[in-house]
Amino acid sequence: MNNLDIEQLQSRLRHKLSCQKYILVLDDVWNDDRAKWIELKDLIKVDAIGSKILVTTQSTSIASMMGTVPSYVLEGLSVENCLSLFLKWAFREGEEKEHPNLVDIGKEIVKKCRGVPLVVKTSGSSLFSVFDSQRWEIMRD
Image (cartoon, rainbow, N blue to C red; front, side, top):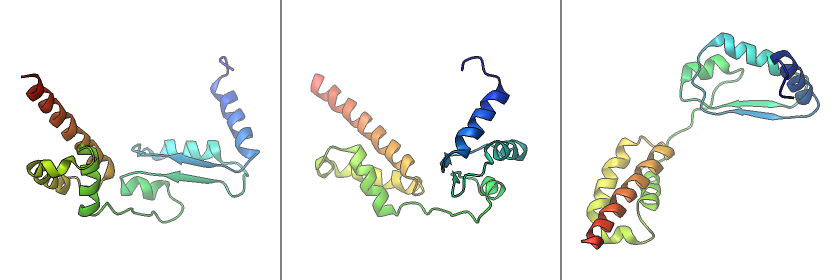
């Protein structure tokens, strides 16, 4: 299989997809080249009834270019849910009660995350790393 050319690979992919129902997830698409999207659609266009392609993107123009159905826009998390997620990643359980000043900082950080869970999680875990390394420095001294 290592020596297959692109046509052979495409042929095998089409055959595999035509034999069964499938769902293809294209996550976090940023390429807005319509020609490439049409080329991909032609490649995977097979008669597998009930098969679906799910595309996620942050761009409304890409969503409209790719979609054959109206796009579904996800809402971000509420500020309360963001703070809860942030605190879970920033502190060990119950530890946030010992550091209300850091919780206040976290509240300000969460407002800037615009409800995006990955941003909240990354920010919270980064705060924990800083907090943990400061604690280590204090313990070492």
